[in-house]
Each structure stands twice: as C-alpha cells, then as structure tokens.
Image: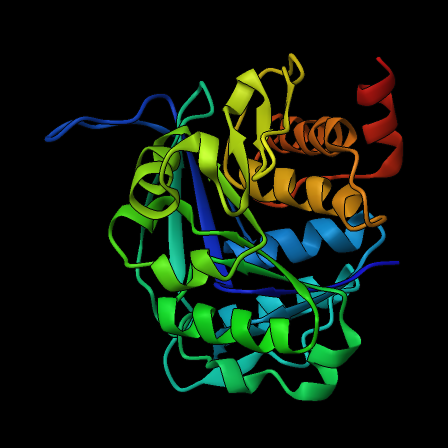
Length: 293
C-alpha cells in the first residue's frame, strides 16, 4: 500500500448544473445543484484512498461548518486529516457551473485554503510516506514541501492546475519528478518552464481530456492512451481522478508501466467525467468493467 501525502487546496464546492453557460449579460437555468468537498488536494486524496492507497491531506480549512463537513467527508473514505490546518479565515467556497455537455466554469473565493505552510507537515508524517503530490497552492510553500520531501528521499509529483499562467511555479516544477498538465497548461509549462519537449528534465504527463493522455520522459520514452468513450456529464475533478489512478500504478514498483499508468488514469478520469460532482466513485469493480470492456 503506497503512502501518499497530497498538499494543496481543500474547498467546499457548490455544483450548479445549468442548461448552458451564460455569456456576458446572459442568463441560464439551474437544473440541479449539489454540495461536496473539493479542491485538487482533497479530490486526489479521496481518489487515492478509494483505490487502496494510504492517503494524507495537507491543506487548510476554516473553523466553520463547511470546513467541518469537508473534513468529515475526507475521513469517511479513510483520508488522514491530521496535518490539516484550521484557520480563522473561512473555508474556501467554489461555485462550479456545469453545462449539459459537462463543461465547467468556476467562481469562488480563496478563503483560508492557502493558510497552511510547509512546516505544518511534521517530519514524522513525511518520513513515513512514500510520495508527495503537490497541487495548485502558494508556489513558495510548494517549493519548500518538495525540498523537504527530497530530503526524506520521497519522489514528488505536481499538478499546478489552471493558474499555471498566473503564478510563478518555476521552483516547485524544477523540484518535481513527475508533472501533470492539460493541453492549455502545457502551452505555458513546456516552453516557459521545461524548454523543448525533446529535452525534458522531468517526466511530463500531458492530459488530452476525452482524447486520452500521453507521457513524455527525459530519456525520450513516449507512451500514449486514447482514453475511454464515456459521455461527459461533469468534468469537475476528472483531472484529479486521472492523477489518482496514474499515481496508484506509478508508485507500484521502481520501473513504472506507463501504458498501464495511462490506462488506469484515463479510466478514473472517464468515470469522474461521467457523473456529477468532484468525488468520483472509483471502485475496483467499476474500473475493471471499463478497463476490461
């Protein structure tokens, strides 16, 4: 059982399903709504725990009802929340507006989701882990966490998310062993941080959404997988589910089978996109049905 620490945002998500995403000065009809914990660190930790890993989350929530609900939900699936910081600021709330094709627009406030620091993770917890997964957060905190992880001989993965072009993630990206980006994020990352794709220092996992994903490695090894034909209902958290599935296989041994990593990652992403909300049901039975189908 791999022991993974996920660091980053823990939010409270309000998902609003609409008939269409409105343009400026436009209007849409809400067809459904739900509430659940979210944020990439929360989503990946939940996915890893469901897939059988020992997952710990480092982040921060407010001392309020939304924060307590988020922690309760994480603990209910077996995620260790001991390093989670409780702050005086309110828990970050994100409003996810999802249209009938599963496309998402996000509104929200940051609240207290970056109140945690790198030293909020104690050495005992870090030393007991096998891996650190960083998600979008304060770049200095991410870089410090990556440095501490390497001091304990842990490998580090990083998914900087949609804010990669608005924040300077150069330091944490340089300290990551494995980086997850989608096509839009890659337009920034490949040129600004990594240089040409044929001379990488890190292993980069490039996500293509419904079209699958590929792996680019420093030694020039490329692997790809076309994904699975599952109708998208809500793409919220699909990238986080992909990361959880990919890491579960990647951490199982010293010589990863990238074809298997991509297949399981894409299966998890497809299951997440096929249902509403950021917390996908990644049960082994559902995964096996998709992978064997």
